[in-house]
Image 1 (cartoon, rainbow, N blue to C red):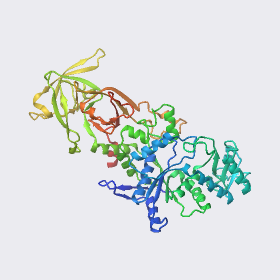
Image 2: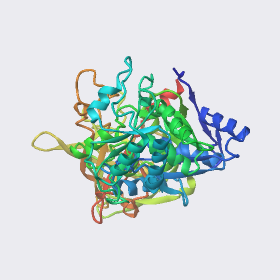
Image 3: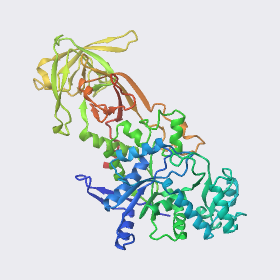
Length: 574
């Protein structure tokens, strides 16, 4: 049993390209470099199956594989494990390439597919048959499972295990030629049906599957299993270190067996690390696909999804995701990471780069009675107090403005420092105002405030030294830009929705309030200059960006990336 060790990948904050890796994987590589195991080379690969969109867990693997290759001045391939055509699609291939590029990594001219090697993989299988290390089995899938045994009971040999080499070669060729129906025969490795490792009990290497492949069409009707294609694809590409997630640890003996029995020189080395698990989400492609197909979300790129495309649409930056992957380090045992750390990373990134904008999400009309009817002033406000080089912008001010509904209370509690009847607040960078009158509708709801302003407080400065504790944001009604704002919360109501201790399906824990759509939001006019690459801090509201799916000319739709409250920063200081 591996001890739970978390080893950090340390990055120099002042120079993103200067990286110092300190983890057990790099220790293995260092030893191989010292012993000249692979002639001083380090060659990794990222091998996704194109049967869904990549998620944040894949981002960790991408950063690790490409990062280790870069650090060791080696190479990293992008290879698609396209050995199951019934579940694969070019849509997924294209989305995966987009995601890897967006994260900031480049595979150069090293784009490969397992399907590139179908001929060679078939030849390797024939070699195993000729060595007496593989045989064609006629057992049904159910019978194979039955014969396999259990963790406590050994399996038993297939009645077809002792077929002659000649018969196996003939049947395997006929499998390739399409003479047999799907599922009627498989090619199995001949290893040990009493092995304590179930993966070594004569595993299936090839199955018959008539499905049109997205690259090879209908040329093949037999397809290699992942455990056979994976080590051989690594070998054919010259991979030195095959970095996998922990669920493949029990498959490593089979990985090594395939390479050893084929007597391949300088075989690659498989190394496993703990996959990324986040609370309040699911990372299984099968479950993510269900969320999409059953309409719980509006696609793979829904901003509530943990997919890279969903995070991109939500407004996350590649820098924040790479930072997150670096912070969680490389572990030898599975654990669950708090989603607040991911949120902390994007806040820290956007605090430095996001432009500040005033936006009122739930508008309350305020009429400043003593302000001239036809006067429009402009106040110069900094774009980002964390980055003075970001400059300033001019924001218009007029007689009628909007403030947040929550910034006014008719009967406030003690220590309430925002606007109240008879109370005074500072409008950010503008004036002091005092509330004199409340207007309500027939339902008794507050719909309008009448205030007066102090002309001597221009710029929000106190003219006579009096203290005003509350400062609120505002938007000029005459100049406000209308927008829809979409507020997101966790997709699930419990930290680990995958657990089924109460006999519930993970969808039973869907959060019904994970999306709130606000219409009629008011934003200062500088927002009209925004594009899909911009990120904003709506003052006191959080970080926002344009939604790439619903925004169009004449209709602005903003996603809240993350709120301003940073629980992780508090946790990390304790």
